[in-house]
Image (cartoon, rainbow, N blue to C red; front, side):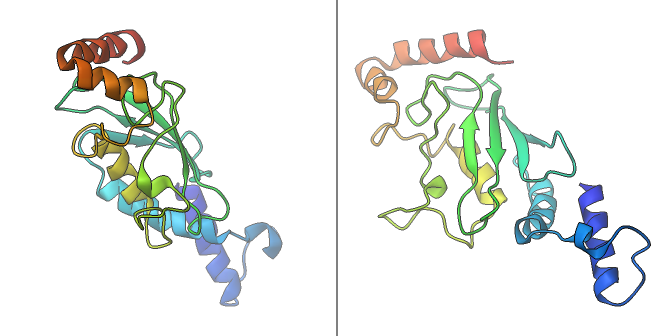
Amino acid sequence: MLTLASKLKRDEGVKSGRPPGGPSDSSHRVSIRDRLLIKEVAELEANLPSTCKASFPDENKLHHFQLAVSPDEGYYQSGKFQFEIDVPEAYNMVPPKVKCQTRIWHPNIAETGEICLSLLREHSIDGTGWAPTRTLKDVVWGLNSLFTDLLNFDDPLNIDAAEHHLRDKEDFRNKVQDYIKRYTR
């Protein structure tokens, strides 16, 4: 992260007429997305929920990172769920692409990793979808909330999981715990 921030500072030096002290000006261009991400990642790290941990495999690529969510209450308590987040070049006009890397029995997350979270929808009829005013912090808090207050059995992506919960809550809880034991940690 510091490397990309340093690159931005060098860019500012070039614009203000100070000698760049390095490669040509064209190698210093930083996309709007990357400029936004430097600010948003700093804000995110300062406001990360206690149940979440973000990691950046390459500090020069803030547009690709992992998020680990470890719920401390509810059905998913004791699990650790990994998400991969890719921020497209057109960000913040389009939402990040998010996929759950951990197999899970959840009404709003398919076993293949797709996620049903309104703020990740580019176009939404109800007005709760993505908007340029949203940030990575909103995405992370939304993912974290899928395990507590945004857990939605009425509008499921995984219909089988939602129907299972409706039929037998205790058996649903047991299957969730079985998935946690088999696929997390």
